[in-house]
Image (cartoon, rainbow, N blue to C red; front, side, top):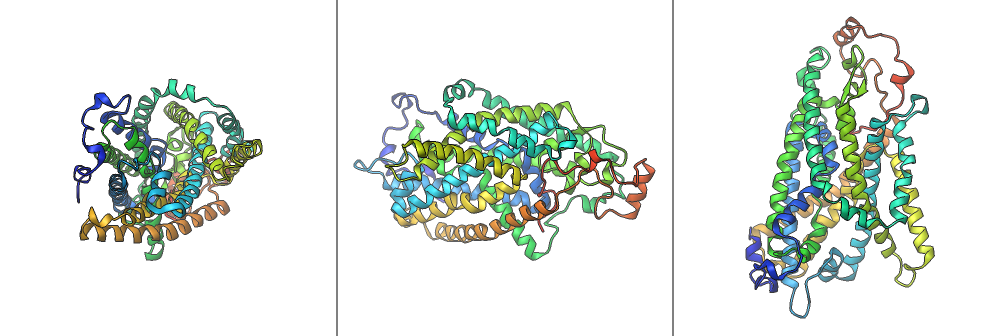
Length: 502
């Protein structure tokens, strides 16, 4: 493959960009890499480990690496397309919308506007789901209320109202320095929680979870369901690294634009290593019966024979570590929502005809719609990883793979790419189309299945355990009777990824 340096040789920017002193207050290469890394390592940290249950030791890390490679190539594609279409009379695009309009014209711009808008909306819905899960960990609601996570999603409507109606951008600027510390703290505590789970795992009798069943090398299903899992894992991996739409803006705001590709690849490499280490640690500790959100597995004082019940890792009381982690993540989410909720409002307003979008009716309608719709989604869908896979399949794959490839070849990509890259793009494009179809279908199946069969935390016996495990449960002091109302209450947070999809 050609390097970024090679692709920038004929760029109008390449003449004097090596001098940072004349470019004002633009980002340095280090700041660029840091910002990309922090944007990648957000709430993904909480749920990426549970995706191991869909693909096992091999498929899940492999698809993450493949997703990293594909997005890396798409960053190069967008950067090269911008360089090849920039002239003295036609400045480089500063946004993804301008870039798509330049490469694919008005039709591409319209498609991108719609998919980007609903991608943003799905992201803030996923954020609200995580906020609700974490609030239930920090301050559990009375069991008599039922599903505490859904109640918290309703209460957190107030957060959405603040961010859609009040401009608090100044607060974000003052609190931006918290980002790196929060991110580092989240990683440290997630690894710490997994280490504690490894110690607790020693309590589980071999009869209850044979090592061959606790984890798997590949997906546990047949070929058909395995292919659906492959599409979902691919979509999720693209969702994790979906920064392609930011490349035009990054190039315009970076002191050395031709280093955008190199610094992005460095951030991808660091993030991938951290994610794989986290995934392996999570899977070794929680296996195929772990929670979707790792915070939900940070428990203590579990009941006797907990390992023979439904959702065993979610029984017991929250640890102080889990509550601190939940608080840190929620601080990070609230700071992010200042940006993402505001961007979602602007994106929806931009879908209206220009002469209407600045009227008060549109102003009110868009904000009320986003507030109500976000709360509704977060109370109906309680799995943020499945929602992320669905978002990746429906919207993110289109903006981060399909449109960039089409734009690259539409503006003469053959001049910058040989037969090898052409073949690679054809394979990527074909698999991306497959992810859109199969990934969307598989994610919808998971959501429907879970809605009809929510798990009952702490119920005995857990489906599929052996008679020897049931005997071990009784020997450990567990009661063969049905659990109390507190134990059998509906799940406070969905976990569709804990078992491979149907």
